[in-house]
Length: 553
Ligand code: PHB
Image (tube, rainbow, N blue to C red; front, side):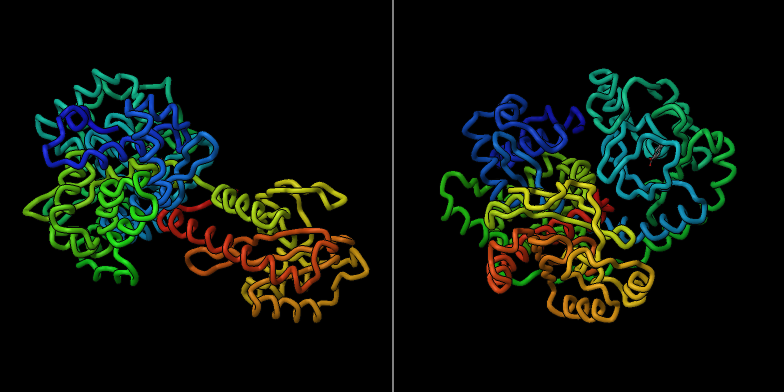
């Protein structure tokens, strides 16, 4: 939630109206957990229908939204805005591995959160949840009075911040502006000022079920060399394992050691800026889109958003000139966009240098960081089926089987009906062969040595050596085609889906009756659209998975 002061202040004269309105639509969608009808967005934002339509078509063009019937849906690519903040902050990159090691050492959940106005926003999570029903994700926002980190940040507040906090408490006493909060339990507000004093005195802060029954945590701030709290690290547990006091006793020494190591890592100089990708500048791209789409493309909105993507690893603080150079925008355009973004709280400036604030994570990050691989794949499989008029699916390896995690059927061609969850033996399926071919050699060998292979049809390859040779060919070709080895009459062609590290995490296929096309035709007609769909899924997975852990389903 934007603090009331930010919402009510009138925009400066030079502010870019379309950028303000576009961001209002994105916030409306984020608040609705990623999906809202265009009509409801009109109502939420108070904007004209024609304005919302133009914003939606512009954001569809930038890849930040998708239209599904009447609904606008946040698209994975939008995560690049939150990623720009996270990359610039260096927190996940520099502190993440230390947080992961702490979680391993303690066998408890660990999270990193940053101050965002009078709230606390999560930027890293390592989850070891057992009895807990609730897990916060990247981008989730808590009010400062709930949870352990808020009291640490508030110990640095001045009168203005306390006034802002009281104002927000008065206007939103039940935390309606914090969708990540479970409702109907403890408020933490009464004890807040006392906990802030204690946090200042002790250098740690405890959460004894301030968020929900059973959930406890202890947090320590990570300070920059100037002494400002950059973020807080929390160790999170449950009353079935610890009391708040025993948790503190058990974890505080190691938590403090980790935080000291984090402070040393953060003080080390940042790396160099990531290489600027070759190709047209963002400004050239928005110009071309304007020429193509005309009034349905609001160029000043698209330009303003490209300013956010100018920031990143090694470019945390940028001058106006640097922003103009990175985006290709005219200085005057870049300047007005920065003024607008600063007014809305997404950018902060000091000594003529601009930085992103964690508020950028408000733009859909919490929703997008929860997307599963099968949800990411869904729209691309639908697009594939529309093109090829045969069923498309995604599967992952589960032991020696494949398991379907997404499916878009056309007509039924199998004797059994395939649904999400269906399992088949990997060796006899195209998706299975793609997945087996993507394994490290020893894992493939282990699986081949320890599975029984029945001949499911007269065509099934069952011999270990022959299958191993087939898998080598699949690995070299980057696809598998299997005809009538699982069931007579059935043919499937599959390609791998790789994550950002190049690991094969899933396979996608098109399946059809063998009589629909010859084998050669199947390859010629289906491989290009299948590969295109897989690479779109990979692109989305890379953006969403850059800092968030993407579950399969
Ligand atoms: C969490 O990361 O889930 C968390 C952090 C601090 C709390 C409670 C939960 O006080």
